[in-house]
Length: 353
Ligand code: KG4
Ligand code: ZN
Picture: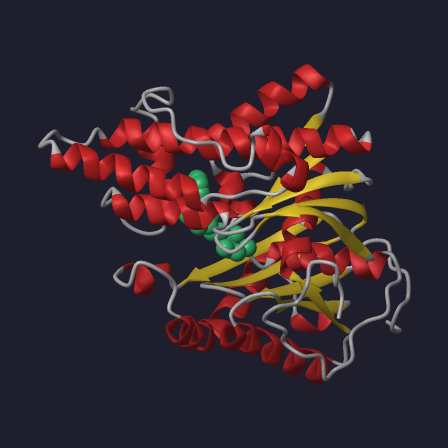
């Protein structure tokens, strides 16, 4: 195909390597054909967080086998694709470089256009693989290990307007740190989610960051989770000092409620303030079962629709990159240059490099 041509149902291969998942996705239009993911999460577990060098090495080793798996799953041949899409940022510099280099090699070897796309915008675009065309405008809430932001999306292929973001820890980071305090392992989100099911969400009244009237004046759509994390640490310390057992499930459930309560409140407020009736939630924390239930419950009361992709599409994967790439092709966006950079701090306003 020629660069920038409009293709209704483009066949796109997407490559994601911004963190610890090597994801290769194949998408035709809004249809998911393959979603192959190789994770190095277990190699990082003993360090309690992702080690960039370990992640880069794992991407190198996983790249070719994962591409092969995606081709097998989808039944396509590489030269069938209309375009290659790749996460150009934000993320870990070395990890991104592996994906970008692989994408360039494919684009050059197959003589196909390449689209270097924003990881965060991909977390939004992936929803169309499950729920159909994106409602635009919409408010997107992205909650992952590295980011917590509220965005206004008018055209996902052109740019997004940041409405608010975390001023300290990301939501997923808070889950990971609190899981560590509770000795629950890494990554913290899934294990806190599971542990919370046997605890009480109202057992402990943990603080809701940036929700009092004074904070709302300056930070209406911003988040803060570092005070909450400290409050949990102090609460656990006090229990331990008094020689009482720490009620792990209650702490997990009450902490989770504090995070989720603020996320949902602010997302709904952002949508209402713009007169927008659709919210998309994406990123690893969107896999949280309580977040999904509470968002749906409160949104319904306000006549707002909430779309959250299934958990496997919320965490990092290649299908999300392919989904955004497919939209780039379908809407006739100009492909990236073959010397596109990997930009570890690519701003969310830059959707395509
Ligand atoms: O989007 P993602 O896979 O990678 C980043 O771009 O960061 O998000 C990973 C984050 C981790 O912090 C993990 O603890 C969190 O998402 N997470 C969850 C759940 N599943 C993953 N947090 C809360 N509940 C979950 N079920
Ligand atoms: Zn992510």
